[in-house]
Image 1 (cartoon, helix red, strand yellow):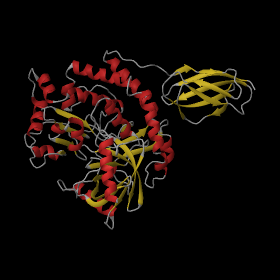
Image 2: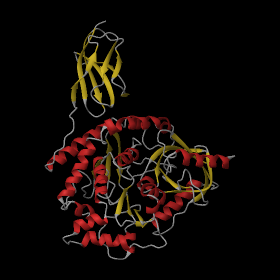
Image 3: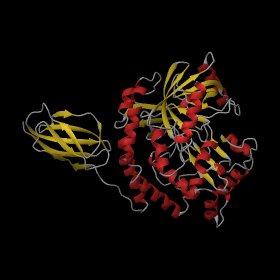
Image 4: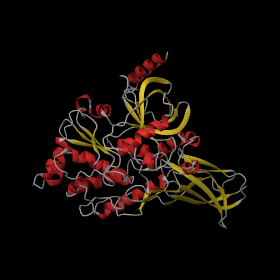
Length: 525
């Protein structure tokens, strides 16, 4: 019966869903994953193998055999292992380590067409939404980026907690994005603790492998010649046709869209930051594509305690500040810089707005609420999670085991989006480019009836998305009523006024993007 259920599941998913993995990456529902393994001390076994692999270069980390049940459908002969860098080693989550699940490790099988998925544990992310928001934003911008969903995980009947499922970038991913005839090129990825700036290190692939750039496809052939030729060209070619040749060899325009998103969401753990978390794909057409990865280190305020860095603070990478050869060479050219600035302006007036993202964020935040509350290995407090959309997180994280020390603060997601939009406009206009966003900081509320008795209706004609709190003050400044922050949908919202005395009040609506609406309200009982 279990095998029949799996067969029905695989057939159902392939017939009903248009793309491989659509069922697994349905992010409107909470998924359930059960892992069963015969390992007597499964956590210690995975952890010991991970630590061995991370300390001995070239040591092959192995998958441990298990049975996986995903939303009731059983897959025997699967594999699981620990993964990650800071998410694994810098913060103690107990048993809640990041994991990779392989459905085809010991048998010829897939789940909804997928061979592998990643389970991430929300490191440095009190909202639990950094990866989800950023990768959605990438996809909405037409960028090939991983899909996400949420799952509760049990191992041998023990509840381990809430995870975010991240689509694996592999040949299945490449096939779904580029087509079956274009998924057989070399795929490179930065490994843990990598600092791969694409500097010229010579013609031997071992030099790049030592920097922890790894080949994820065609490993047996192990031919790095095309990539090394590109890195040589990037660093050493200064001929008059460099710009045209770079455009032939590399998808410059796609990368400029990715960089626009990364800068707006403050993704410091990336190529322009730490030289990490990206894939390079040698497309069979001869042009290298950039694929973004690992967006949990976003929506943060970073303070470098030791060492020097320019992780954030400027929108346009400039050669005198940024020695990473790819961005340095691209931004030598005014038209590519202007294209990038145009991308950023379109982003902060389109997809990177609360009108576009707000309801999606609230819905996912609500979806995972109860699962995180019950999570036995959650790192941040439940109240920190509850307030993460609107309030500054005071649980400051210090990362001191790396080569530099960082202190990380987390503003509320909604006000930070608005702050970053303003910052981007300031940066763009400093380059003498035109860009503006609507200034909605203070506006007049439209309410009726006024005078009111037991309720008042607030017209929501200011924005298509409102996540707001209402407060009523009397004319002495005393707070008389406060509603909880809530999602306000539709054109009108009814605010109850029961138990309030007659008189003149100030009604204030504080929205999540930092704007405020206010009006004078008369209550006549």
